[in-house]
Amino acid sequence: MNINEEKLNRLGEFMSDRGYKLSLAESMPAGFFTSIWSLQTEAGNYLQGSIVCYAEDVKINVLNVQNSLIKQYSAESIEVTESMLEGLKILIPADIHIAVTGKAFSGCEDNNNTSAGDVFLCISFQNVLKSLKIHCNSRNAAEVFIESFNASLDLLESILKADSK
Image (cartoon, rainbow, N blue to C red; front, side, top):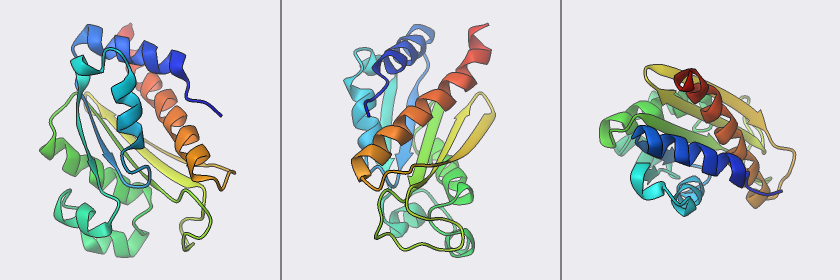
């Protein structure tokens, strides 16, 4: 499995051409998404920064995710991912915000809401929020990261299409 470089480059050029700024909050991929975006040639024009919030304490103390939300839904949930995104908006202003959580490999404790391979993506752009849960069949963390990143490109493209008309 490979990163969809064609889509990455197309979206990077689109954001750069329109002057859009991008910021990310990453739990499960621990900076992987941001490092891939930084390799895109126009990244210096749009990439603002990211927060790696692998630990629950960082979600709570930096992104202001409520501990009660984590206890109710788990740290790997759409609800927590959306809350991460809202905290990110305050810390790193941008036009596009991406937040991601999930369980990349077996050995992660399953709960009622999630199991290994579940990934939660949230993207906001111009007051539009789209959230997505995907399930990756691989139990190899690198493959889950890549599949998740490609899914985020698809979701971002679907949001930005409305702006390209």
